[in-house]
Image (cartoon, rainbow, N blue to C red; front, side):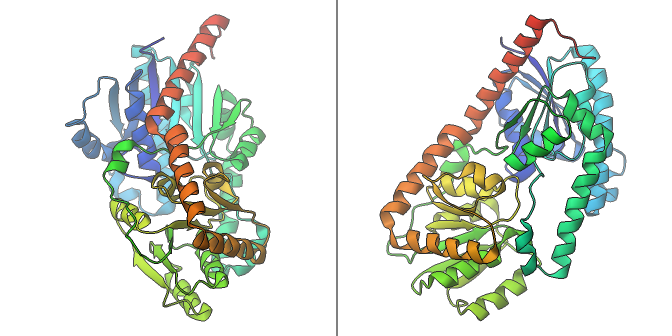
Length: 416
């Protein structure tokens, strides 16, 4: 069953980027190889998408750009972004309803934002609806709050409150109930989706990586370099960089280095921590880098340390695995879905003390065992190629579309 007509809602959709924009773009780009795709996305994505399409030929993609007048100035601040996203979803539905009357879509699919606590109004169309993958159901274990500043604790409490308020939104619950399939990025989010009324819930990472991206990067490890650990991300309290540094110090590896890529409000406190731990000479703060520069940094290190306390994605874990680097992470959120015992270490997160102890053991183990580093790196490359390649993910999704439409035709079911 080829050339189905698929409507995709992708608020974030932009080429050559990671995170949400990359999820949106790579999903629809690959889907265009299998079915006819109409993509609803923001007006400010237009120039980036059209520039990419000028040298990327595809017959299956149609973009519909929409926004509000003056959208550039009133979308400032986190609250403004959330409000804009909500109102944009309503406008997207109104346009989608008109398009559906003209085109007759087979399936509607919400791709971005990857957030379960906000509604997707295209679910109101009288056709099967796929929601996600969506995330956001992950929380920092309460035992880790004691290491946070008052401001960070307030952040966590407000985040949990915002999520709870989102779950009370009748349109969020309607989105869940109307989904033919709700994909969750993690088991935590899967539980929340069941709670708000989704019947058919599966766990699937929203992340992927393309072969074209990998071949651009030289990730050959320099000969005779010291063993290097690396952590990548915004320097925020919930990213757990303080746990990684404490574990590195506890491992007592005087001939190793620890690189930190990123910037954020915790940087000064992390620099102070390296001095208190006596590892300031071994730790290098690299600042914020471009995506290609970050990949190059990962390629010049041996092991990724990613002790994030709540995260739906954790794209850097996937990047490190694709580059043949073992990953040490906490057994939480998105990283726990990506990393296996063959590709790295997933450390339970019961208390900060326990987590630091076990992170330190994993750090020491990989620093001392080159064969284990090599085998885990190869296993990571294989896992990414098998399960996280964008082409493979899109092919699987295209087949799922066909199954859903086929089942609907067999049952003669019409959605109200």
